Image 1 (cartoon, one colour):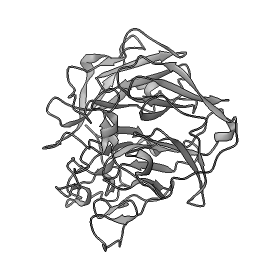
Image 2 (image 1 turned 90 degrees about the vertical axis):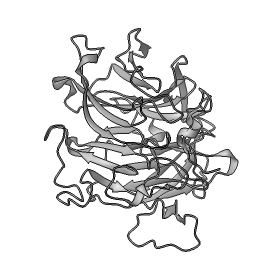
Image 3 (image 1 turned 45 degrees about the vertical axis):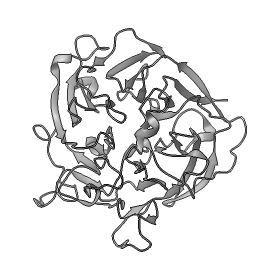
Image 4 (image 1 turned 180 degrees about the vertical axis):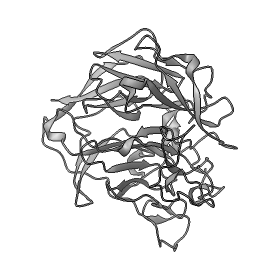
Amino acid sequence: MPRALHVHSALRTPHSALLLLLACSSSSSSTGTTPPPMTAKLLLLNSSLSQPVYLTAPVGDTSRYFVVEKTGTIRVFLHDSMLATPFLDVSAQVSGGTEQGLLSLAFHPNYSSNGYCYIYYTNSGGDIRVVRYSVSADSNVADPASGDTILAVPHPVNDNHNGGLIVFGPGGMLFIGIGDGGGGGDPAGNGQNRRVLLGKLLRIDVDGGSPYAIPPGNPFAGDTTKRQEIWAYGLRNPWRYSFDRTTGDLYIGDVGQDLYEEVDVQLAGTPGGQNYGWNIMEGKHCYNATVCNEAGLTLPLIEYGHSGGSCAIVGGYVYRGSVPGLAGQYLYSDNCTSFVKSFVLVLGRPSTPFDWTSQITPAGNVSSFGEDAKGEVYIITLDGKLYRIVKA
């Protein structure tokens, strides 16, 4: 069977849906040594969420964080207690396929003054929408009538590989990760086609124009033969990427097809335009071929295979929270096996791989990591559990 459901298999049902959401990735560099004992543990904060897939917080807001539910609502947590009224409910607008739904939320860097937040979802027709909302007079509730579509991306034919993450990165630019449009093996060739937005990481300036402007530093800015929003391409289904809040390095967890999952890294200050290889490559290997042209491709920093039941990478964060033994470790997981592993970036290469599964073991299929305004890291499972990583 084609791995069309790679990145969100586990979203089919509360227990297996997101498995397909992310589905498919793999293994050679995933083995990690045992970390120091009694370093970290998980603190269960809530177990009644409805298919949660993301957590974030506004800059500087250390008392609240917001959890995105795939079913279409955003829940507010104040001092770890979930408020009864959702921040936003767009459940009537989103599609509910395996890898579809409300997939992420980003607060504008100046949210405290302008009240703007952005959501990423698939609409009732299956197409991708990035929509801006404003907060209401109640700081815990968005104004549902304020929705303004910033970006609309057709996603025809297949309901999988929607990507689904929006993040404000360096310079206040909005990054948007979009999957290749689905189907096994990228049949439309979107990953390598720079005339379309599917299979890409985009970078736009939401403050520079209406609805946005192209940042001058984008690799194809001014080139009318390509989509100028593109920051990087050759991605299959980037299921969670993040910027290290200390260094600015960009880490991308890209779900593979049938054999290999991967983590791609772009060092801070590096110009865009990276081609991460899909569908020429899967991980560090030629896809469906013994020989392929690797010229101009940026290969992943690490890959892992599907031995032991692994199926789909869940990208995480470089840990900058309050557990000293985790400092500087890039944490990642897998939607099927829910391991928690890490490595440290040293001179641009992965070092000191650790397997934290014995200390940080969520009960359920991991759908996402999250990070709050203080840099604390959370683990979310599709069956409704929310954990924070804390000192053991």
